[in-house]
Image 1 (tube, rainbow, N blue to C red):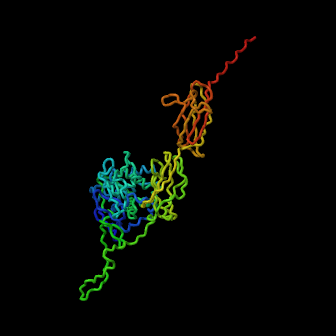
Image 2 (image 1 turned 90 degrees about the vertical axis):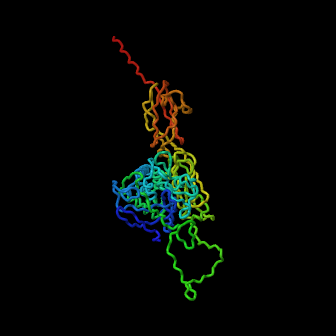
Image 3 (image 1 turned 135 degrees about the vertical axis):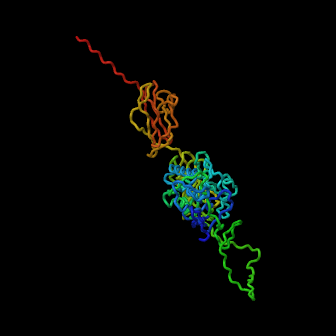
Length: 580
């Protein structure tokens, strides 16, 4: 099989070097207008174990480009060299808009997911392998590719079988999915991983800014830390599940880490040498028939067994009588069903009630068990958990989809859920990857942020003269179960009395933006420290003791006394009596 991988001839700056490049299975990009289908090699037929819990791959394991980095390290500044397709400075350079998209994606991920430690050079390495940096930077001023970059249709003919999921919206194919754009996302993955990287309000896989940001988020899911080699390997394998793909991306990553430079858009090197060049459609299985339309690579012919010759040495073999009647179909070789093939249904594996306050992590996690028709647990099955509906609740890490392999007990435990700000019911659907069985829905509830205690942060008396303003502003702190209650909605009302919570029509008051009297403030929220500082209070000419009541979501209530009294006046001193 080693011979099947072949050797690629690289173009050097002055010489031609021979580099051995392993051809991967089911891997990523195809140039526009190229219609020949890539083929899977036997060596890549089995997915790498490191990726067994991943969500298949971002690319649907479509073909990719196997060009190796230049033999010499890149120079940090460009030098004169041939244009597209050449081997000079452009081979090491990255087109300006493409490079800008990678760096902007790194900056965005540094803020959104700082623990991921995504280097832009990783996006550059994947972009180089997937599409040759958007076909040498053939993009317009907004970063959208001049022509669509499409992989072959994933029709099961030498590739994974992925029937159409987008009605041809992205790939123009309403029968099967195809990898799309400079980072080669398949439509079903783009549906949840897509991002708007250039702020135009659209998520377009053909735009390098959108695609680079989506790739960054995709590589940063599952709380992976890409500064750790194990997580880096898992992330790359989840993009395209091939050990050869991983090795090639790592070589480009190290190459770009040593330095690169910017070249004009459209002046980048065109990619060459696709991973499916000359590969056989499927691994060789004795007795198996190649798929229709496939072009298997010729292999060594088996030696013919010696057969008796006719007397006289004519060399003609004696035909043997058929062992089966004419027209009898041959029996296909027996195949062992995979664990996924045996799954009949999904069962809840004891998931507790799922409730969390907005902004908090759910304390319980979803557990699903894959079972056969007889109720036997099935291990090593990938279960996809998808948050559906109009909600901003996500899994930890900010994604709405997570895929987990079942353990030896047939149970897959979803990542922890993080409640968003939208309150109400949330649905999480569990499905089996690669198997059409009814999904299993879980209901979670997001409640509004709440406080159960309010206290004043100061002790100074709140007093004011008629027609004046109070010297001190009212500030309170909200907590819930003893912890800071941030972002909690609150209302402040100057009430009529302790037993009458309606707004008073006299006494202290707030002012609105136009300076008008207001005695009820709504739409207030505590800050990140649980603090709420009310606006200044003013007094009319009415004297007396008044009440300010503050209430929050969750039932916390605090009533504060306000006093309005005229300033005390001292009596004139008595006149001295006249002397006798």
